[in-house]
Amino acid sequence: MDVIDFHIHYVKKELLNPTWLNYLESINPEFFSKMDEFSEHPELVVAHLKTEGVRYAVVLPECAPATSGYVPTEEVIDYCRGHETLIPFASINPNVHEDIAQRLEEYVKIGGVKGLKLHPSYQFFYPNEARLYPLYQKAQELRIPIVFHIGTSIFKGTRLKYCDPIYLDDVAVDFPDLKMIMAHSGRGFWYEDCFSLSRLHRNLYMDITGLPPQNLLRYFPELEKNSEKVVFGSDWPTMPTSIRANIEAIKDLPLSEKAIEAILYRNAQRILFDI
Image 1 (cartoon, rainbow, N blue to C red):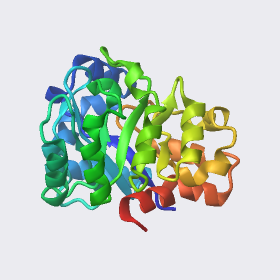
Image 2 (tube, rainbow, N blue to C red; image 1 turned 30 degrees about the vertical axis):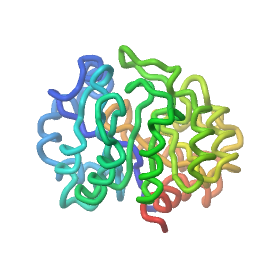
Image 3 (cartoon, one colour; image 1 turned 60 degrees about the vertical axis):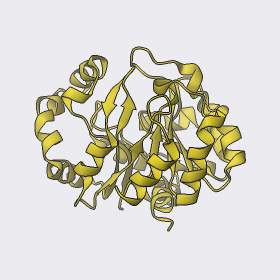
Image 4 (cartoon, rainbow, N blue to C red; image 1 turned 180 degrees about the horizontal axis):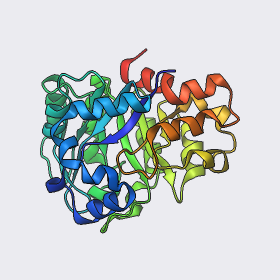
């Protein structure tokens, strides 16, 4: 079975805040010791993903200098160029960038990005603020998905009030053709809220990044019923186990083969490639 990992990070020491670097070193010391090699040679990441059983992976930048760091979209675009396995996304911060809709269009049409990542709790905005609406309109026109960080975080300065998933209800209603993914599916506080919202809105999906796969049915007892709205993500390299171990743990859940295929590949394929 092909697997799409909807959530990996491009990490580079000089771009990340100390909290992230310390966490990465503690949770994945093997990667941390080789970080410079991985950040300079994307072919090493491609080879690693292949070994782990991943066919495609979404590579996320991060413009959140006040909390986690500033990993520019431009660096991610350059890093992914020429590697089919690596799918670049953009990061736009409404408190840093001007002309955010135009910036997104340039990233897509010139840089070739396939989606957008927003971090409300790291970048300090509510997702339903009117100033974001031109950005959403542009993403809907361009037919690209938006990933929102929805869940707790270890980064200093994070303000959780901004990533309560209820604010996505307005966006889902006002932009019915905009595909949106709730990264981490409400980790810590909002599992039930994310599940209910994804059931309510056809354009709202859950990303299970950062959740122990063996606990998924505890967080979401009716996961089988919602399997068409769930995508797999690893959070690599900020994870304590291998990507393959998480994939196998999902395969071992008492879910139908159809549901497992949807979570690991088919839903992401539909979102990314309109298939």
